[in-house]
Image (cartoon, one colour):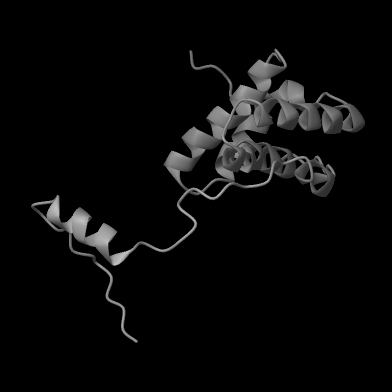
Length: 135
């Protein structure tokens, strides 16, 4: 016999349009459940709102020490959606103030002509873009 899906998880998954997003968003919420050693997704909704607000703040601080600063919002967005579709309103503006500053992933200046030339010389096949841009 098939197990009954938790109502909160069902609402969450049904609110997401893409199957790939369902998989990744569920993984992120599961990480939160595991961090706090909660029983399941439904158990998140049993936590009093003020306590849940503090828990998410603490989780953000935990993430800041373990993941790329640019990834912290990626970990939190699925939790935000989960709570939103299950009618739990938290002060996300306050929580987002705990997010670390984003770091720039690439160099601070544009590619130099010589750098582009070296890259072009080191490849044997150029990939054509499907997009055409005109000025």
